[in-house]
Amino acid sequence: MENSSICDEIRENLRVIRENISEALDRYRSGGKTDIMAVTKTVPAEAVNCVFDMGLNLLGENRVQEYQSKAERYDKRAEVHFIGHLQTNKVKYIINSMKMIQSVDSFKLAQEISRLSSVNNKVMDILCEVNIGGEESKSGADPEELEYLLEQISALDGVRIRGLMAIPPPGGSDIYFGRMQELYERFKSEYNMNILSMGMTHDYVQAVKYGSTLVRIGTGLFGARNY
Image (cartoon, rainbow, N blue to C red; front, side):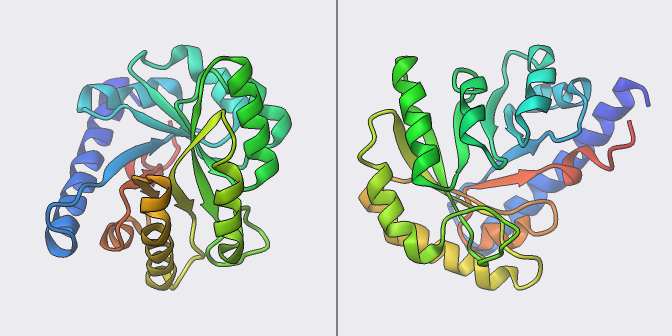
């Protein structure tokens, strides 16, 4: 597919997403705001670069190796967050290029991010990932242990807690989004949080309803990966 055709398709998809979010905000959260993140897993850099002229510069990366293979080809306007499961031994590869790490699910990982941030004279913004559905197949902190985890992480010098992130189980999204909203409201003031990252292609409208300030959209924006 020609690059111009790819960009036209992405532009139309983004228009629909923005319209859906605007309608959800008007209906459920008058005066609220929800940002859009372009999730780039398996999407060529050339297609990703289409979004920057559409007023979208926030990218979500799932895999360290894939990110490394594409980073140099991204438009310089990109603000990149890491959103996938992150092993402690991979932190060193992204510590200086990520604006935020959204998938911090343990104190051990937060410690390593803090250590490497301090070495590089920076403070890394992070989100604590919550396994809101208690799924064995997913990473994330146990909701019951979140309070203690936040307390531990907040004592580290090299990280700054900005909010919470979650990927709820398929089905029953309203229940899990509602629980995440409750957790966010509970800890927001104490830790000066301003980001609740939840909602993807199939459920972002419901996520907006429950207070999501950031939705992470891949297929809904870039379409099926057929280019």
